[in-house]
Amino acid sequence: MSPRTRTRDVSFLILWVVFTLMVGILPLSNFVGHSHWEYIKWVPIPTVEDLRSPKYLLDISSDIVGNTLLFVPLGYFLRRLLTSSSPLRCLLIAAGIGGMLSLSIELYQVYCHNRFPSIFDVITNLAGTVLGVYFPLFSRKHASPAPQHLNRTPN
Image: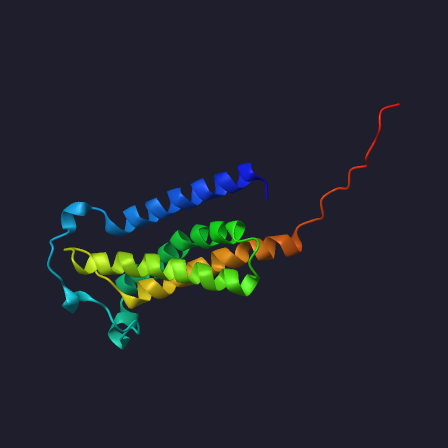
């Protein structure tokens, strides 16, 4: 990877982490400085009543898609930057970074009004990070080979 490409990827990674943090903590006026541990959704398993509610199903579906897609670029850029690591090591590092970012956002939300931290969010964020790590691996396997250029010398 060229230094220019690496710098670009690091820049995109930093921008994406900042964007993800902003999505997770804004508006800052929600922060109250005292905890709301009673609002944490510890068990991500819905009840029968929840599954019968179209509003809940739409809510949970958008949560799954949104949280997963928000963390895919994080895994993608981490994979591009960790080229010297084995795929398993890269996956573990990315999962650790994605998990810590997700947990820190959820911990911040414990101290906010109108935000509801959830273990389910951490799970879907982690899934998005892992999908992002596997995206470049998948695209390389199915990409067509680069054309070979002949070395030509001037006559």
